[in-house]
Amino acid sequence: MSAKSLRWTRRAIAAAVAGFFLAAGGELRAGEAAATPTPAIPEVIRLNCAQCHGENLEGGSGGALLPLRAELAKDEKALRKWIVDGDLDKGMPPSENLSPEEVNAVMDYLRKAGGTGS
Image (spheres, rainbow, N blue to C red):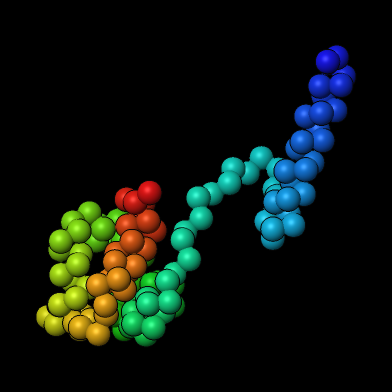
C-alpha cells in the first residue's frame, strides 16, 4: 500500500469513528482528551438517597457525597454498615428498606464514581 493510500485509509477510519461518536450523541473538540464518564446514578440512589444528598449526590440536607465517594468506598464493611445502619449522630438515617442487592448497587456506584472500582 502506498503512503498516499495509507493516509486516505487512516482519514477514512478517523472519519468513521468520529461519525459513530457524534451519532451516539458525543461532542468532539480538537485537542481535548476524552474524560472517563461518571457511571449513571442507579434508581435506588434516586429513590432513597437523592432527597437528602441531592440528585447527583452534590449535597442537600444530608450533605454532599461527591467529595467523599473515594473515601467512603475504601472500606467495604464500613460503607455497608453506614448505608444499612446509618449514623443518626451525623443525620444519616438507617436504610433498612433496602435489599442486599440495592445496598450492593449503592456501594458499586460509590466505588466506581469514587475512582476505586473498575
